[in-house]
Length: 395
Length: 177
Image (cartoon, rainbow over all chains, first blue to last red):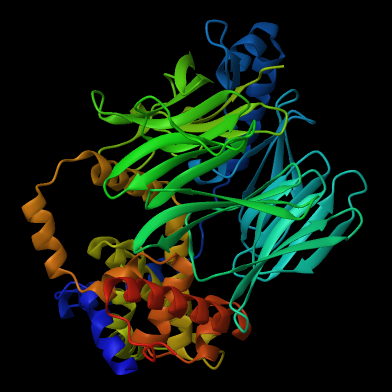
């Protein structure tokens, strides 16, 4: 049977997908050129340190003028009066790095990672600090007022740094999912029993609470842990039809409740204000709505088709496709009985690829790419203005 | 090492593993051009590091690991995110005739289609195990994770494929056990 599967897997591949003789020769030639290039000694340019010194001196003089400070502020961190949100550029950081940024209200800073290092960028001082220095590439971070959590590519250890004491501890898990106050949500599969075990570890007391679920069903979005509740979205088969099932487990009372909806999957979910917001898939169509956890009723939200969303109380931030303009835009709405009132348009976030996020304190965070810096071949110009972080605060 | 010897060693590696690596890269990036770029870059690095590499681990494992790492890096890149989002728009916002959809579906092998819908961590393990016929130990080296992680992902991937195949009426109870 395994040979059969080998043959069937071939079906995924286009027939002509082979490394041709011509391509092999091209590779040998390119490899040889690069090899020769690397063997050549690097020429030392005596003028370089001089030029750098002169530039640094000139820059120091320029920056000492107060009016330059004003210009710099406008360029780097601009609080535009006409709009209610802030735009933040972090000099020298690429789109790939800024996509990983997480805002922390407590320190008014962004945390992000690049290679094996985690950095923070304080908006008030515009100073970047190395928070974690490592060799192995980091794959994910989470941060809140008390903790910084990170994991390296394909490793099975998660590292937790207490941001007050700076103590770092490490424990074994194949992934981590969410961080809420002192609780870290992780999951592990037990293939013997066929269960996924969700662990909620109190990072202060090391107390662990568990929730076990069969992994027969397909998970459709990442689970959420929030305010002592665990929300697991899945697709299950019921009477021959696929349905989306939300399981809401109350960790305090150890009681669970399930909500089922006639959709084939979800793109994104959010839990807030006794509601589960989600963008549902049904074949080729999309629908955005929410489940009222009080009475279990489902409410479709206008005619929205969100590719990603975030919600906080009665505010809903969505990344939606605007057919007329042929692109996606971020919009922030106020939700009232399934109807939306626009709060912000985020017109400058022209090609935003990262899901919006609300912090625990209710600050909305976005990351967007300015379309005018995208070249025809899809590459992004290496300019600080090309990628920006956006914040909208409500306190 | 002389140029001729270096060229010969690279050519041998390309003859032995080139097609497999190209197909592996394709399962991640879904573009022939991008897959070729990744494989080319991996072979160039192999050419440059040939001496340091000798005796450290098998060429095959090393090349597979490099391709997987390059593909993982590509997933984190701006270019990939843009491509993904664009295809998402196309998927949900272009009108395709029912007839052409049915024709397209008939052309696709259901099993192949099912595997392509799996999350990367399960898809890559299934692919390396069943298509490239790597051992669990070699997959652990390629993916730089533990043997237990590979076993877990393999079991979970099989289970998911099994369930999805059952839905399509293709599942044979012993097929993936």
